[in-house]
Each structure stands twice: as structure tokens, then as C-alpha cells.
Image (cartoon, rainbow, N blue to C red; front, top):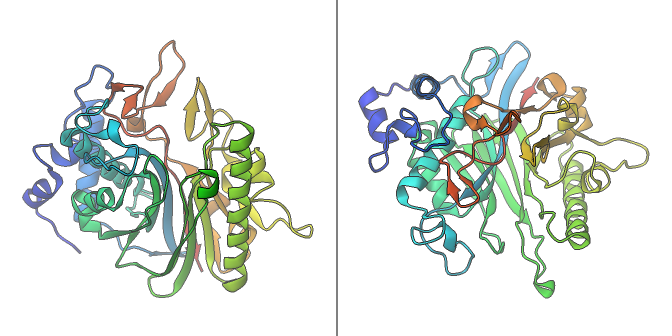
Length: 379
């Protein structure tokens, strides 16, 4: 067991005067709806989780279990101005007044959320083996998250490539380096300089968990809907490229568990998912979108008062139905809708995302998306 003194935990969790992980004190904004009780509860869970976390790939009655998650963290920028991207608003002098204090709080919120996400339904801590992320600026913010917050004790490392996205936001994969060994990292470049189209790459990582369980993951953040027909065409093209890469991995490694996750900027019913990624081949349904089972009226994203699912987890049919040596637990993925990620919406419209910014107004929250996750079980 990795024992950590509380004094050391405080020292590691603090970043330039912030409280432990940024969790113990409520955010001092007039829009904060997070109770001190809840924050202290999460702080305690985080502390316990880091002091006595259970082994990764925990042996259960039905096999080795691994948690895999995805989260669009919404604008995880550092405070430095990158002259090659449009990140000026996320600087101390920019319109968002993005100071080190605000940046550190954002990192603390990321660590808090991953800690809470590690508590499974059986009362055990199972830190995610893999965490796909969208809207991270660069390797620096990932290093600060993995090494400069409480996550350092969990030994997370990351895979990241700089993409030519105009805003400078990329996808990345966090992984627990003692428990997962990548043997291939690659990317699918979707940008087209001849058409002045620049967007995020799709990330591919293949590796081995605990020395014997092979897993391949794609992490996506497909082009946005802005742009009408042109934007839809680009999303369809991206989906076709992704499907081709998925089929290639399956053909090369038929026994490898495959998980496709990301912000697709599309709901389950839209063409880029149904026709671009899930299209049948010779009458067979090869892939299943696990978010199809999400109850109506819920989602990972809320816009103009309505919840929808933009963040998806797609797996081969064999994983969803458990017909092989590896299966998705329960055949479902889940949306992590913890109370601290939400705030009250005006006019009695229920809850909405507790974001970092609402327009130009600083709220000090988390993200405009909820995390999604699944558990893989290897027999």
C-alpha cells in the first residue's frame, strides 16, 4: 500500500496558495451552488483515494476490470500566449483574465473529478486506467495536471500530439504508466491546408494493461457544427476516416479490445455516427454505440434548456454483448453527472453545467460537458 502523510498531501495538492486540490473551500463567486459540505466530502474521498487506492485491473469474480473514461474539459489552457494559435483570451491580459490562480483552480477541478469518478458502485476505488480528453491546449497543461496536482500519486502519464487547430485545442489520453504500456501511438490528421481547414487530429493508442490485456483506443473531437452543409460534410469525412481506421485495427488485432470515445459534436441519431461510423457491413452490425441506452431527457451536454448526448463510447458488437473474452460491464456506458459538476438553471429549468465561464462571466466551474465512462472486463 502506498502510504502518504496528510501533510505531504497538502503540500502536493497546493499550487500557489490554493487550498487542498482547490476542493476544501467553495468557489467565491455569486453563482457558486456547490455546498461546503459536498466539497469537503469530495476532498475526503480524494484524500482516501490517494492514500489507499486499490490496485488497477482489480481481480473480480468475473475477471480483470478496467475503467475507461472520456471528458471534454472545455478550454484547458495555460496562461502563456502562444503566438501560433488563437489563445489570446486565455491569458492574464486577455478577455477572460486567465490568471495562474484561475488556471490552478481548473486543474484542481480536473483532479477532483477524476477522483470522484474512481469510486465504483461496489464502494471500491478504481482510478480510470485510461482517460481521453478534449480541448487541452498542449503538453504543458497535461504535465501540470499529471504532476502538479494530487493525480501525481496515481502515476498518470499522457499521449498527446499538437494539432493544427486554429484555437490550439487538442485531444489527449491519460494512462496509468505502471498499469498500461502503450506500444503504438498515432494520429489521423483531418486538416486540409489546401482548403484552409484546420481541426483536431484523432488520436490512436494501442497498449497492454497489466502485462496481458490488449486495448486500443481512439480519442476524437470531431469538427463542430458551425458552417452548415460544409461542416456536416467535414464531419462525415472525419467519421469515414475513423471507421476505416477502426476496421484496420480490428483486422490486424481481432482479439484486442477496441474503444472509440470522444466528443463527436453529433447526437446518436445523426448521420456522421449512424452512417459514417456504425454503418453495417455485409448485413452485420460490427459496432455498437453504448450511448444509445442513455435515458431520454438526460445527456452529456445541455444547450438552450435541452440535454443531448454529444460524447460517445463506441465498441465492437462482441464487447457490447460479451460474446468474447472481453466485455463491457453491463453492456452499457455511463454519464458521470455528479452534483458538483452542475448548477441550478434559471426559471426552474432544472440543472445545467457548472462551467468555467458563461460567456465572458467567470463562474469558476468545471466544463460544459459531463464525463462518460465504461468498465471493461477481461475474462
